[in-house]
Amino acid sequence: MNLYPYLVLFLGAIALTMFLIARDRKGSPKALLLKTVTSFLFIAVAFASFMVNSIPEVAMFFMLIMMGLICGLIGDIVLDLKIMYKKSSSLYQHGGMVAFFVGHAFYLAALLIYFGFSWMALAAALILAIIIVCVSKFILKFNFAEHSIDTYAYSFALSYMMTQACYAAITQGYTTSTVLLAAGAILFLLSDLVLVMTYYDNKDSKPFIVVNHTLYYAAQYAIALSILYLVI
Image (cartoon, rainbow, N blue to C red; front, side, top):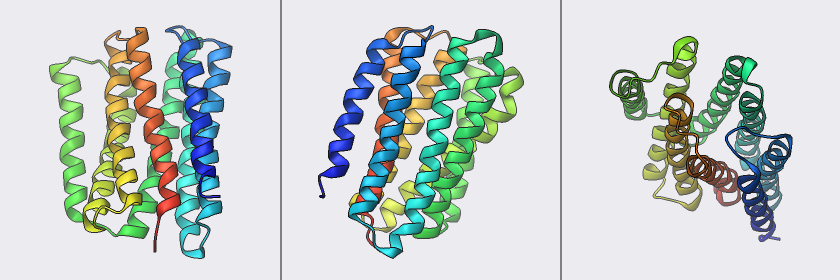
């Protein structure tokens, strides 16, 4: 039974491979379907992990992570619609960023409830978010335009989730669960750094698409699998 989450993870890897083959810079209904399946499977990994590690103390963590993953699924669908329907791309981008912002809020809630608050993690997140925004805007000259507020808010949410996950890993002695959470958060950040280049620097070639989605799905699957190893 302990292998069930990994069997689902294997199916996710197959679905991701099929999606990356189908996905190009314009998107397509077929690619969107395969992306939806790949995203649904990281939710299935979380569910299978909780079925194995279903002690009452893990239930709240599972529910919060599950809500974050569901927000990720919604964001995945909406952001691919942005690629397919150019005339409404700004609206879809806004919707996708809101979905992921809410998802990170759920992840952060799980981290704070189970591993405690840290002023140092909060301060590090503020500094990191400011650096990311300043480098993107003033050095790389990315024009966020109507998505400026979305970008600032999302950058902070992502940064805080990452610093809090790293704090949890350090204070918990690098348990398997916290290492997966920290690794997932870092991969998420790397994925979004690649994504912002595809949106604002025309880096939407096939290699960038592959790198972006590989990092992203590795992040979500790592976060989902952390439920399996959570020990209270």
